[in-house]
Image 1 (cartoon, helix red, strand yellow):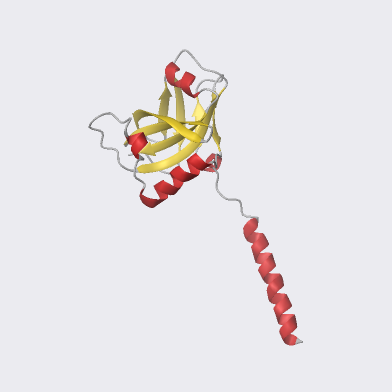
Image 2 (cartoon, rainbow, N blue to C red):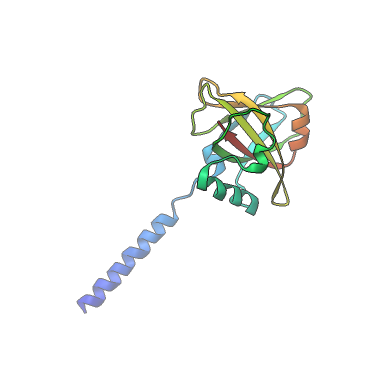
Length: 167
């Protein structure tokens, strides 16, 4: 009888613990990157893409943090970027501007004063179909500004894309 009661109590405690762990939400892109723009008519939002292309990219990066070969191919000759520090998925909504659009990205990693490459990977049908790269320097507050030319805005508008930050 005592063994049965002990077993029932242990099972009840186990089920309570499992429920408590299930109630803790996992981190999402929106939790890990703060995105702001200076233009009130164009918005860039963080998305939570868990499609195969993004999952495969994250799995590869967990192994060695090296810039994927297809992305590295768009780097200017002589670039010294080697390690991916942050990854997020974003989407430009609300149209484009004729001017450059500055998008401020604040990640947990402090990029103050660091030269970084911001890789933009266009997603179509759960595939990264093309990479482009923008180079910049981290701001004093640790964030980075991604300057989207009108051409880049048109390329990205309404499309979800991967952002990889490498230094």
